[in-house]
Length: 132
Image 1 (cartoon, one colour):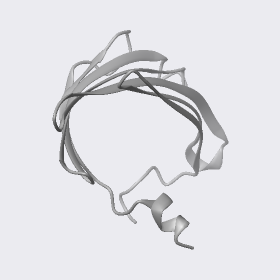
Image 2 (cartoon, helix red, strand yellow):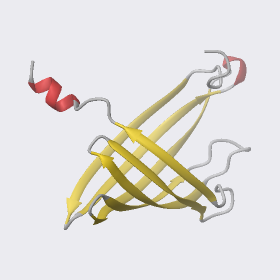
Image 3 (cartoon, helix red, strand yellow):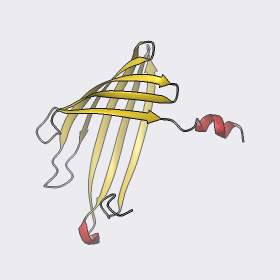
C-alpha cells in the first residue's frame, strides 16, 4: 500500500521466552533486525532486547512493566535504553485496553511518551489447531 512502510525490504528474527513465577508473568524477547538502506544498497542492523513483567492487581485490572533497548542502527540512530509502565484492563477475555508511560533512560531514547491501546484477539489458534 502506498504510504505504508519504508518501501525497502526489512527482516526481523525474534526469540521469545516466557515464564510464570508466583503470579507474575515474565517475557524475554531478543530480536535481530536487518533494515533496508535506500536504493537497495544493503542493510543496517541492530539488536533489540526486552524484559517485561505483568501481574493482576485486582479483578480484571493488571500492571505491566518493561525494560528494553536497541543497539546502534547507524550514525543517525544511536543505541538506547528505555522503560515503560502500564495499567491494563480486561473488558472481555479477548479484549484488553491499556495505557501508560514510556520514559527514556539513556541519551537517544524516546523521552516521555504517553500511550493508550486496545488489543482484540480474533481466535485461539491453539484451540483451533487441536480440532484438526
